[in-house]
Length: 607
Image (cartoon, rainbow, N blue to C red; front, side, top):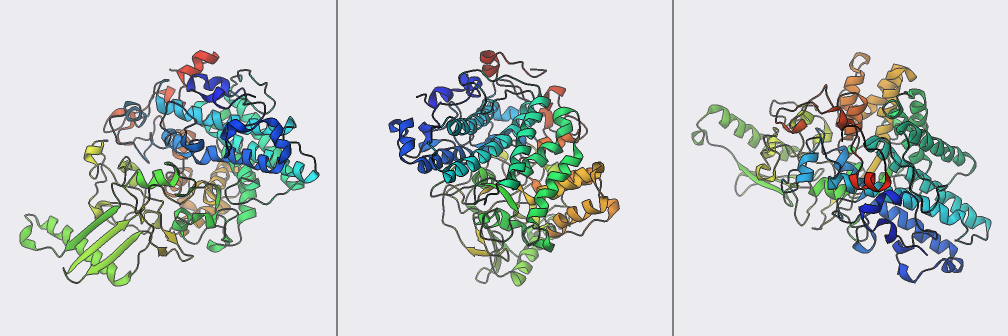
């Protein structure tokens, strides 16, 4: 029996990993002691073992490896977790985020938009994706080779559904492979064990992936299945297809807007009905990113299922340093911010403008206390009668400590609608949890390093570790903990509305429908609805940025619009303060040099 670690003992053999996994399943990752399990054991409890091996597949999307051991060797375990590995390449080089620590040369280079083929962040992300693809393939092969001893129709039906789930998860991984790396190795359950997966043209991999997912989607018509929380099903399948078709021109040179709209609408039509204006969106944006956001996932407790594909997280049993934990801890510096403001004295200020700014800040906090008497979205506004000051407490995670590793680029901040020149007040509820100039943070990115944290960018916080009730109000205060409980949301229904709108603007449907779809998103955010003249492809791109920030869409969106390499500049793009165009080669990341050398793959142009 071959062992899992024989395939993934180091990234030096990640190329051959796509040739498929072991002949009897991913036994080395079973919750029980994998070294004691053989193929013969499956016959004793086929259902139990099949559940365990499938759980292994899902675990590699939620954590970095079994029993605290990273599956991607020679790379930081937390960074190699699925969501965080993709975040590294999809968000950090864009206007939405950066990585402040300068003692890591590979990350410092990545945030400027260019990397070398031996960059460890690149290698780790590639390794995570091929591992997860291989595990999906291996599960399907294990079933097809008869190792689970499926001797009843019920067991076979269960296996069929589990294989569908693996094909969906595999398709999701290939979506990111296509976006990040272009011409990539392709392997499925029909690949020969032990053979190096062939590198195929990007367009051919795209066609194979969408063809397989289309078959999976069609199969649900004859073999429907209930999707449970944390698992994938028909809606995830169609949502991935919508994302693939959205980027068909980028991946293949040929747009497929009609198919994009078809798949996005399929998801919309199944999930609409409850929620905001009957759209299927949650009434309150922040409920989707709270500690109990699984209630709004498919299979969750709420009738609204906006969170289509979620990766479970839990301090108690699915602990990881990616997902919501990264998106809270990575931005904050400590458990939160506590500041007591006293009414300013004019004599303490040399400039009238500085005095007026301090007075405005004090009055704002005091006025909020008069109208808000509870903690809202992680922010507690309270009046301190003893000191006659306004005490502002901001608690996002009540974590053991923050990492202060990330901020937003100022150009992204400017995409939101602010009520004041300081960008501290907005009617857009999507920035309610942000740390802005009101809390003393600087919007400008004068230096991307931790030494200047607080004066080199806003903190665009989206997730919290508070539980919110149906009205979006805080139910309780979480205890201090290392990892957040909020599930990471890979795909939301809001993304499908914006995706459908983009397809429509490219001629796949009526613009009035696109306007309705976009206005669901804007009005839920507390903004005025657009009229037809407001909605263009450019304004839609900005709305995607506002709605989907930190959801691993930004780099691909900018590439699809032709604005990643040139045509749009943000601070430190290209490694200079004012920003600079990126070389043509930056449209794709290089394949890891170790993989290219061992497998004989052709490297991407320019590397």
